[in-house]
Length: 167
Image 1: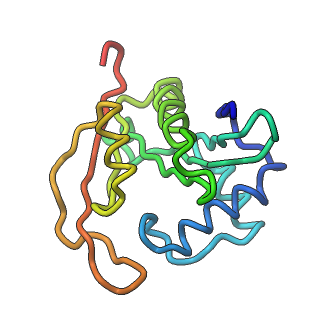
Image 2 (image 1 turned 180 degrees about the horizontal axis):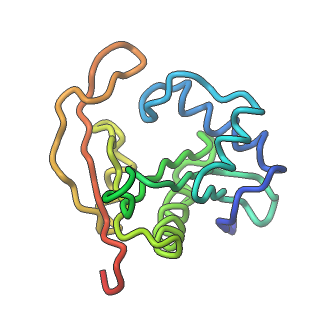
């Protein structure tokens, strides 16, 4: 399987919503409570600084989606944030890593200086392992910072990555 990451297009909406909403439905990684409907989802994906999709070049199947946007405004507007979602059936095939690497490049191209993850849930072992492998820095632990779908609170581990040249 050859995976490429490219800009989201309107034709990707149905597959992208399926992937995004799977993560929301699972209730163990994204802060969102409600799934996106098609019209709302299209607007949401198009309003981001950049939205990318991971595509299987052999089949054209969309395997993942990510959004890139400012983490804050004004004097902190140079810090970006991303969210990644990989189709359940496609996890473990490298789509997530390709999207993270693409988002680092896109964030640089968009003029951001830092990529920050606000809420990596402690139980998201695959993400934690990947971010460590790629050189992200953990900022500590926020106890009980994430409300899991089953009602209990899980710790979150914020991360950052310097995007400046040479970093």
